[in-house]
Length: 298
Image 1 (cartoon, rainbow, N blue to C red):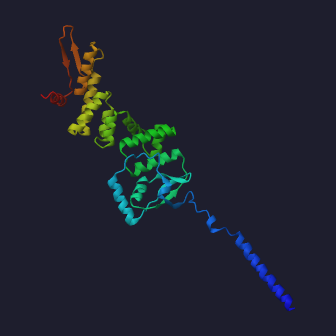
Image 2: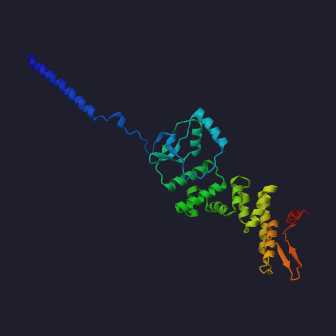
Image 3: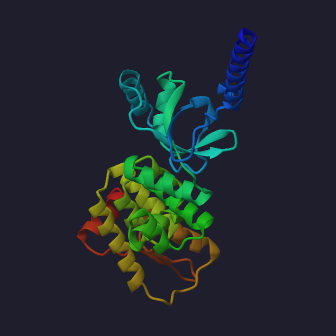
């Protein structure tokens, strides 16, 4: 009987041990748990695993502002997560490049990031919209971003306006900036002239006149109102100018164009067969006359 009890106890222990081994065998090993950050979650991601956004419309970042944000992050940490998408074994920035750069400067190795799905069109749209709303892109950066969205996302101006919350006219005004000469675009980008100055210059058809007025703005600090008055005067002269004009040689035509550029108004050069002639420089009012006299050092 004792022998039978031992046997029973042995069987009980054996069964118990078998059960434990069975339970343990069904538990996943800790190292096999998937700890990959999931889409839709906010996770801490290594900075070395994050790539910048190739669709980022901002091309320049204020170093002083970055340094200030970096100091704040050192003290407070990064409060607002950046937004990324999965890109192979890495993550690609959708928005928050300023925070990303400042975090690097602050010496962080990981930052919180919101992970979401996005295709290339959504990447471009979100980067543009976030920057327009928060980063105050300069007008040329906005114009280039609008053009990029139109080209790459096959959008019309009206559809683009709906996505960025701007009317069609505003979108068109930005896009027209890209038709200005590069030197004027650079002045807009560098905040040497305002969007108001640029809009006035756009309405001048002749590039040489645009460049002349642009230089006047830089040299004399002309206000937007002064530039608009100057442009109205130029356009008025162009409208009133006679359609028919006496033929002049190539050399005289070039001289006539150079004078028109200098005085920012339509100059007429009359030359007779004997070499005599006259130069007509029209003006629209006393202020315009004084401007021309100044150019003549009168």
